[in-house]
Length: 70
Image (cartoon, rainbow, N blue to C red; front, side, top):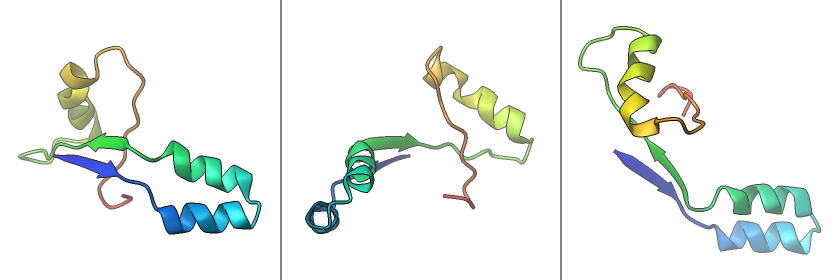
């Protein structure tokens, strides 16, 4: 499954108006961020979950996020 974060113009306008440039950049940098996730059919541990993503990730940097943290 793929999750896409789109822009939040109200938030961006609010941060811009308040001069919160660092937060505005952070919000803008996460726009169009793609998150892919996979469910394990059986709980086999975090290492197995990471291994399942190997063919998708290749040699690119990646982040592991647990579903209950997301």
